Amino acid sequence: MQTEKAGKTRDEYKKNNRGKVLQLIATGMCANRTQLTQAMGLSKMAITKIVGEMLQMGLLSEKEPVLGDEPGRSPVGLCISADAPKVIGLLVQREYCEAVLCDFGLQILKRETVYYGDKMDRDMLMSYVYRILDTILYGESNILGIGVSSVGPVSSSTGMILKPFYFFGIKDVPISTLLQERYALPVFLDHDNQCAAIAEYLYGNARSYSDVLYLGVGSGIGCGIISNGHRYRNERGLPPEIGHVTIDMKGRRCPCGSRGCVEMYARTPEVLKKLQYHSGRFYDYKTYCGMTDDPLVERILMDMVDQLSAATVSAVNILNSQILILGNDAIDWNIRYVRRMEELINERRFVEWSDPVIVKKAFFRKDDFILGAACNVLTQVFGGNMLFD
View 1 (cartoon, rainbow, N blue to C red):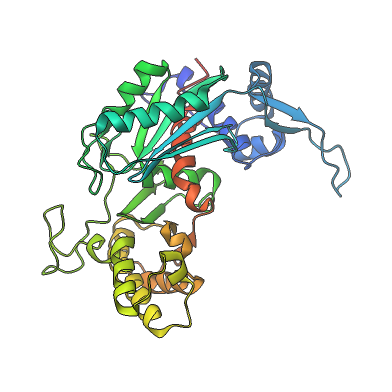
View 2: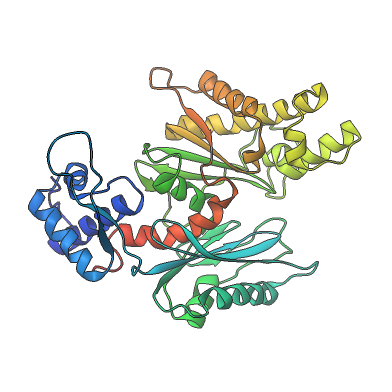
């Protein structure tokens, strides 16, 4: 049973409970009132009241009970209503931007993508963003908000894309303010890897875990952190950065100003350059990841895994993460590289007496970033901060 604590009002707990009920239904963790009662620790009467309110609001619908093997009446099923509001997810990447319209179950209803030209500045970036959002929003009225997932660094508290590396020199984009002014909708921004982590935590392969580390391997190397069921954020809204963990104190100079950052050795363009140079073949990253019978390719990719694990185990030791989710280009890894990453992390981590750290590829594969953008709005709903005023 949830009880009130100092600093929390009765109204806040009411909103939190309603948001949690909606989350459990939307993410598939509960399918009826009986399961909600068990998961929430509330009375049957309290759950009945909450569900009744949501049915009236058009957020939930009832569905025919599924007959089971056990005797007795099967409980009436619950699902997200087709009339429930929708959310927008916007992804800003180094080569393209993308937008989706999603329901509360994270199903993609519309999708628009546009690739940039050779030249870019802040105004051009926003013109691309407006183009795809205008298309997504055309004919839609019941929209709750816009979630933005972007290359970093970003500040989620100020709604700013700060100064990403390898991004045409674009910096200090007040994207949340610009979108709020144009569309008159609430906007929530976070780093793309943080967004991916929350998508996996709510709907994907990390649903059964409270402490999650997400590792995104691509043009840069980033991470997302879920700690004790909460997305990591510092007071200034800055995301964590695993790509700039030093693995060689006397190594190559990084654009960040440090030396030997793991990003200088294991990000996709660096590994691809090494593979092409030593093999004399010019395949893409995914093709190389499938060439497990080539000793040269195998050696280079295993070396990449070793470098990534050296940085990742430092984060695991700090956070005591239960699961590591591999995303972005790591989706293309052969399962041998996934298992090797798991083996190295568990060999090197400090706390040996706890359960082993599990390593899995992202459930949503390369859609983690864009679906995580939509989750920026959904987490506000599930936290009781929207819909229940």
